[in-house]
Image 1 (cartoon, rainbow, N blue to C red):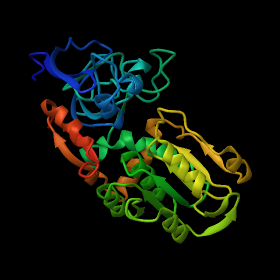
Image 2: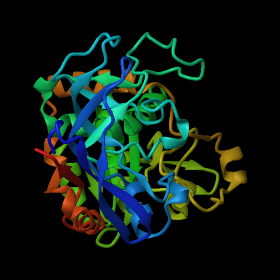
Image 3: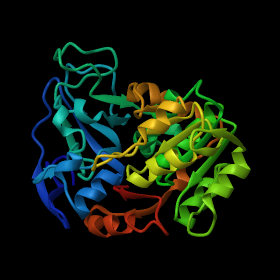
Length: 353
């Protein structure tokens, strides 16, 4: 697309298994607005689950543009807008980019261009009393586009990891998808000394080992033996338990909770980061007698999380190898299918470059 033509391609979520590429028209840029060109966008598990089964549960609405993990470049600026320049890279801030919290996942990362109305940056929240975060966060180009496109999913892991500061220095992370790996990598950044990642995908476990994690594949190894040998044991209600201080459910399925019930010892914490779409069952007696904690995925702004992630990258942790495949927008259905193959894909991207 050229801005002169004002038309661009956009991926529209229609229903499970169906995404249409349509041509849309950009309006002229308003005085308080900006227009950005998407450069790079990665597929979230929510995008894939919408494609595979159900969009509503993921806040991926039918007949909407979607995608929310992106790096965008400012290409037009309204005359009243301050704080950004043409060519700046930004992250459109999910539900705040359009001043509509219902669009957390339908931001438009899988569209060539976005029109961001009533644009605000950090500290400028006078547009609407409902807006408590900026429309976008400015990005440091020097960190590289593949690192930057991982800031949004890594922010989820960052919030979880930061919420576990002070809960110990050893952790078991169940799930080696990007949320599990981001949590594990950020736990290491925050000072955790020993972290084991559990998953059935040998490809993803290999990626975890590349970042210094211990791993366990239940299809090939005895999980109890691996946990007991790695973290040690102590008596607890229900028998001998491992001494890992924290467990992280990074998938959102009952077996993750069952690992905690079976193996977590006295005073252990379970942090639930994966989204459970069915009610989870807990052994309340074990939680009570073992004085355990069960908590959510953590709080904090994207800006705060991005600051920590970028600091880690500047200190030499390169996240870019986690982007394992690239596709064009016209290939988005192929990209979705590839995302679902856990033996070859860690993070799949749509590139507009």
